[in-house]
Image (tube, rainbow, N blue to C red; front, side, top):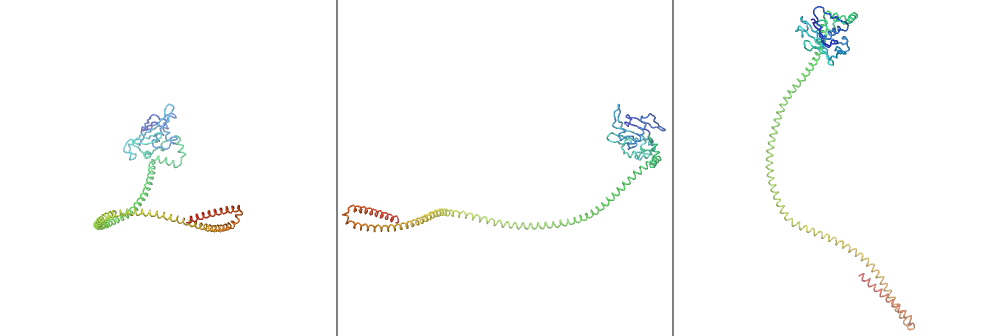
Length: 392
């Protein structure tokens, strides 16, 4: 493969599209310091898959985009296109059908970069392997940058070995060997995982076989159970039919009994109405008797109260009679005493009448005393009669 053309747009100092033709033979670029000679080399390394911003004299990969000047605004994207002659058909089989390969790398601010080969989007690794097979690449010692000669002189043996391998054209084989080793490790990991899956599937297969045997046994038992259930339901149907027949007979008997009971109930209802008609006068008589009984009870209660009051009055009158009898006795005594006094007075009067003629004033006094005594006697007798009447 041979490089035939390099095209830049928005890459570092190349704000406008610029094209570098690489013709057969020796192609050189001459210019003062700062004209962009190193930028062309960095653009070539960048389009071949450089990933180190430090090797491109920047702090980040977006530093390769034109950052603007006092008179020109900054750009948002940069693009580098490298045209490769593949007439010798040394490219990988994926791209070996085309005689011209156009490798393009674009970067957009804030979105990262992407690669295309002949318009087909590819990975960065595909671009790096493409140039590694050709004995070159972004880190090829053939691309000598500023200060690289002194670095090669003071480089470690491992770095010198890498330079020699790239010069011998085995760098691509080494990269493919590393990729193949990674794929082989991944394949071994996949095989181990596949073996685990196979073992798991084997255990599942054994479990499924057991389940299949159980399912077969279950189907057999299900058929047997269905047969027994059919026989059971047939037996239950027959028993239910017999029960229905018996229930129909019992229903007929019960209907006859119910009819008889209804007739008896009707007769009983008629008899009850007749008895109610006969009982009505008796109930009236009973009510009247009850009213007479209540009246008699009230009369009896009243008589009982009257008798009790009469007994109390008799007790009081008896007590009063005793008092009057005692008073009568006292009056009798007083009467006797009055009689005795009257007898004595009469005797005294008789004894005094003799000298009365001789003593007129004394006789007058005696007669007055007799009149007083007689009045007292009459009063006592009147009181005695009154007491006797009250006692009677």
